[in-house]
Every structure is written in structure tokens, then in C-alpha cells.
Length: 91
Image (cartoon, rainbow, N blue to C red):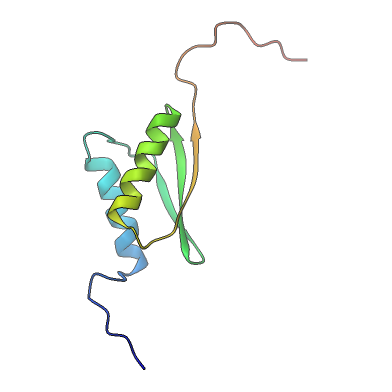
């Protein structure tokens, strides 16, 4: 038994990756161009660094909303935007 799929139900990987890049770069609330999308087996992994945990959550939320059927994993780090209040002493 074969299931008929809508054209948009399971887009090719390259399309999804390009769409995520466009979504993150063009969305004024995100405007994030430093995120890389990499396919790992059946999931997409988002790599990069952002200024805050809130920003990371916002990126993941938007990508998940846009592609609810695509498993998304985050490997997005947070860079400390403010200067440290004290100088770190290295051993």
C-alpha cells in the first residue's frame, strides 16, 4: 500500500536547508546569518553562535514552527556579548 504525499509534505533536504537559512536571515526578529544547517541522518542540526539563550530559543522555535515534521537538533552556542566583570586568571 502506497501513501500519496502532498508536494510540500517532504521537501528535499537542500530545499529545507535553504528555507531555514532564508527564514533566519530575513526574519527581522532573528536576522541571524551565522547559523549553519547540517543534515545528520534523519535530522537537521543547527550550528553557530548567538548572543543569548533567548535568541537561541527563538531560532529553534521559528524553525520548528516552519518545519514541524523535520527533527531539529541544536548545537548553537551562546557567546558572551558583555565584557566579563573581572579578568579571568588562567593557571
